[in-house]
Image (cartoon, rainbow, N blue to C red; front, side):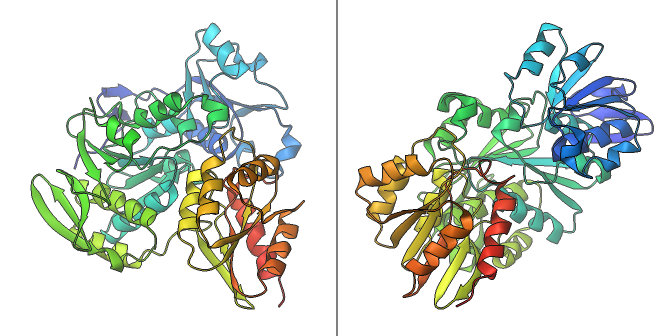
Length: 475
């Protein structure tokens, strides 16, 4: 198994680039955006000998003690600024995923002929070990977490990083030759990649999301496909055959394409036959696991499991190890996560339902009468399909709406013929409303179908607060 990046004394080798002296030594780099990825990138680049300046529109006081680790490093701070004045004399601008590519700082850098990159690209160039990556609208966190479990059970030291909340730059600080880096990758991160080169990469699905940033589905889909652009004939591209946008991505790829499908047999990849997941690679069929043995439930998780299995098998993980991981992996926090049962009502935390398609999958997993909490930050997407699914299913009895999109969702629900619509000013009020509505038993599902930024810092904080509210309820 070839390593994409490795060290040899003081000389650095990058995949496909040959040997070079440390390219970061003495390079003047401005990092804009001091969220987790920006902080991790600053630490990593300081270690590599770069001359680092950090900037964020928020003042230093807004970060509490989050920047304390950077204080002992030779870093220049330009906090509470837009970064434009700090551009002069820089060799490189590194932006965090939250900074769009049409931001004033990016446009100014391009006018000055200063290259622009992102944290993911930089970390991947520096990190040692085997790099694999997963993107898609939904299922990324579950898939990379399951894939990480497969590598660890195979005896590999594995870092699951990227968009999952643990920056790839942080993993790059510790990763060594022989380790595996499993990266969850977002479309925001792919905007700034150029030579990002995962040896195995997957696109799980593509549905409407982030159009407030990317504008059109064509742009969004193109960004997802971009994960494969640096691959060569030795690499693997894993794609969802049942998703038309993913299936079309196979055209013109340099890597070896492996499809996965719940609905039909594929020539190369993973499929279901007689209740068994089958992997067919290089013309050889291998039974992997019975579908009913996979611990995480639902058709969407079967797709995630097939993608993870193909990724692991493509990197040499034995079938018995993959099988064991599929049978024992229990899922991830905030994704259709059981919180508690109280007075005959089950409370489910699906805060990671940040778009319509993700919430549709959560709805389709329900098996009892359900009250659903919907709403959040506006990403300029349509809620029509969500409303129609709620009308069609007999299990969603009540819809409680919160957040900036509450009016839009209410309009879509009424247009679809849904009448049981309630409003709540806070998440706590929404939970208590659901508790009152479900006195006869059933399920309360928190799956907002929206991002969290109107009311919470991120979906994780939103999910934790939901769980705190639920665990504080009394019968």
